[in-house]
Length: 266
Ligand SMILES: Nc1nc2c(ncn2[C@@H]2O[C@H](COP(=O)(O)OP(=O)(O)OP(=O)(O)O)[C@@H](O)[C@H]2O)c(=O)[nH]1
Ligand SMILES: [Mg+2]
Image 1 (cartoon, rainbow, N blue to C red):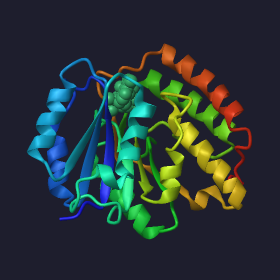
Image 2: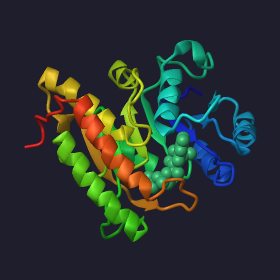
Image 3: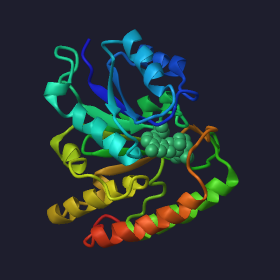
Image 4: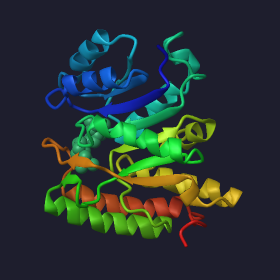
C-alpha cells in the first residue's frame, strides 16, 4: 500500500477534542490516505493522544512535535515541509514520488473527513487545478451549522479579504484545503507566514503574485467547493478579539504583497 494523499493536521491542546474513531474510519475508507499530525507545543495530553494513535496506525501516520506553540500557520507549514522532504518520510510506504495531493484539515473535524472524496472528485474533473478549498455556504441540501455571530463576523472578514486579494473568494478561512502535491505548492510554504491565523489569505496572495507573473487566471488554479457538511465544534480557542487582530493582519498582508492582483476575477 502506497500513500498518495496526505493531510496535515495541526493540533494545539486537542487531547479532549481528538476523535480517534473518526480518523481511524477515514484511514479505513480511504486506503491510500496518510495523516501527518503536528503537535504545536501543546501543554495538555495531546502528545500522548497522538502518539497512541500513530502507534496504532504505524504505516499510515506520521507526527511532528514542535517544542513550543507557534500558531496554526507555522504548524501547518512545518507539516508541509516534512511531507515534501524525502528524508523525513517512511521509506517504501511514503514517498515523494507517489504523493499526488497534500492538504490541511482542522483537528476538530468541523469539516468531516467524509468530505475528502468530493475534493478529490473536483481534481479529477479539473486536472489543471492547484488548490481546492472548502467553502461554508448555507445551501439547501447541505448541513452548515455555525453560530450566527461567528457567521456574520466571518462574512465581514471574508468580504474584506476578498477586497484585499482582489479575488472573488467566498471563504478564505475554512480549515479544509487540498493542494496538488507539486513543487509550486511546496514553494507556497517555503517562507514563514506573517500571520499566524489568517495565513490562508497569505497563501492566496502568494498564489496571486505567482500567477500575475505567469499571466494565468486564478480561477483556473483555485476552486471553492461548497461543503456538504460543516459544524462549529465546541472548544475553539479563537476569541472575539481575534476578529480585530485578523482585520489588522489583513492590512499587514496587503502591505506585504503589494502586487496582489487577480487576472481571473473579472
Ligand atoms: N487556536 C489555535 N489552534 C491551533 C494552534 N496551532 C494549531 N492549531 C490548530 O488549528 C486548528 C483550528 O483551531 P480551532 O481552535 O478549531 O479554530 P476554530 O475557531 O474552531 O476555527 P474554525 O474551525 O475555522 O471556526 C485546530 O486543528 C487547532 O488544533 C494555535 O496556536 N492556536
Ligand atoms: Mg474549529
